Image (cartoon, rainbow, N blue to C red):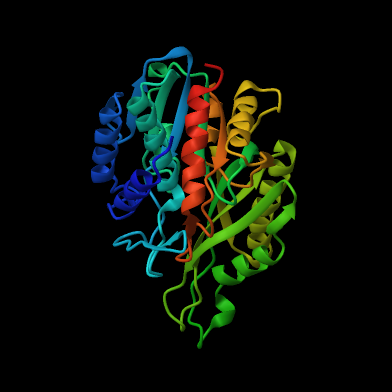
Length: 360
């Protein structure tokens, strides 16, 4: 059985260990030690990912979580009160995704303690997930045997099983106008800021439909109030679980910039880059069947859901590993109000244990 005190200790220790994206080295070492203690062969690859394996029956299942968290995550001071774990309000908690990391390690320790029969397991704890899925994008996939996997990196009440996630286009642009003195001869200038303002007003942004979203996330330009700004850079994104809708939305954003620039006498250089591809799994896929059984075995009704966000599982599915994502119970992630219930942390570890032991 899962040991709540040990699991909680692991989570609190990990949360207080530096885990900012790009600064996960100490945490990776601590996770490595825990995995080796549980009997796994483990190493850290050249990108900082923790890779481990445990021999067992049948084809291996991959277990995944990521080691990093979004800022502010330095100096986390967890508070445990009335069964809830939260930060002191100055930082995120780090349940995204140290809840997943801790649950995986606890389940494997239970297997080791009880010398329980289990399926073969491969563990992949990635780095820099929050800043571009860097760890998963740089794995040596030829070294992994697993053809299916479960990540523990979805937010919301415990019991959700992610069956689909969107493709994601990153959109960057540099808009050029013409500089002029804003007080003496503004009519001689072309404001890049005005071009961008007109373009954004015509873009489809926010929630487009149940499958599609778009956002302009940053704008930088201008140097002084007395100069007509001749350059603005902006970055945005479009996501959709429907490729046709994604193309349409991306094109609308691109054309809005180009048309506004042409109309006002400037120019726009727009670039579109695919960040990752979406995926869709069926209720008939083995990994979904196993995940449903594992969640149900904990006494929670499994919920199949489609996601609007991306994660390491987008990359795994693109490399031929049918991978789903389980919610760990972490709430209000990416904010200083992030929290998780101790009971959900235990449920998560118990579900991982059920996954490892299913059908054996």
